[in-house]
Length: 475
Ligand code: SF4
Image 1 (cartoon, protein in one colour):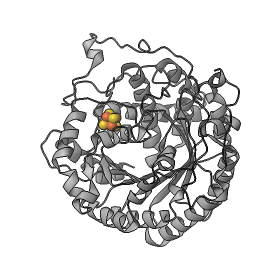
Image 2: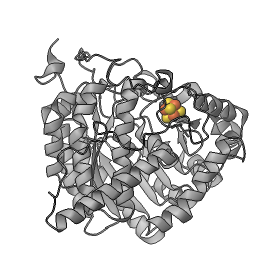
Image 3: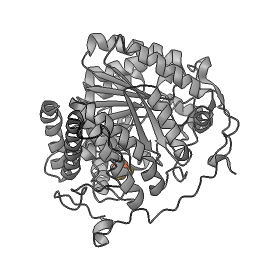
């Protein structure tokens, strides 16, 4: 772990720190997210991407072609994390070829694909195609697949807007797990987006996810993203509800930490810090850690727009690669990129975007010191447990409730970070004061999709007609 950190990650991180201060040219991003399509066969209540093509069918022709993608990737050069996004990625029939182009030119160590799990057979078949190619051409690359799980049974179907989605999710997970015997570089996880629609049922979701016995189970807080066209959708839970709900995740992560080694140890400890950062963000609504979006990370839309992140999207696009002959560097070093980076550095936006916050943690000395403390704590506890001097698992290890001895990022670290509410309040935190929890008024039943997916298989499912019982169904 230390060798990889020291030789592969740390030098690039130093480059981002220097570039943020204007002391060096901006290096290539270490984390690239590419939305392969905006086609989607879900009808999620937290995201409106699926509404794009029923309303504007002609936009589909603007998505980058495989040839354009290959030329774009060739211009970018090596990254470390190559994340696929969508829409539903498996609706692109050439997904294996896109991954192959990514591995060839971006030379990632990790390729990550999320899915709505609505097409188990197709997901399995395309994953096999990807793994078979990787086995020969990129054998050391880890492929992670993360089906979404936002509820149990009908609750999941209601949040995702498609009846039968939950049983297809179970099918997809089993099919993917079966592939791991043949391809150990495949890691299977599930992810829950914690929103006002499911936060009250989280313990049941965690239980069900745990029983799946997958490699990772992670959560993200629901965000309003320009990418998802869900700004002002009122899906983000209030701080006090999230702080309570996240405790079991932290406890489970701490438990995993005791058994983890290598990169797994680091990522699990960073996850605990991420949960803490998110809890603080919900209360304070500012950049808790200086944000390196548009430096360490980049997001490219299906149409070739280069975004610093999915939250800002087109409103802060750095440019479109189609306008510059698919030469990424003309945009990455262009005037729009400099302007957007300056705005981010001034703290003019803030969010809990997980993908970006993991990079921000790596780039923050105080957050990494907290990571170190968590690792040391868990190692000490594991040792005591082995000696029979302590219980194996912590009762309540939440750093959100038990403050770390080293506080998270402040004005220190030499960062120009002017939006420190805590400092403005004379060091007092405003945890939990700003938001009162109001149950979400349910949206109307989503309309059926207007059929724009020639590749969508028969298993896509039918839209859910009405919500299951629960707080979200009160109105
Ligand atoms: S703080 Fe959030 S919205 Fe702002 S640039 Fe960073 S990731 Fe994007």
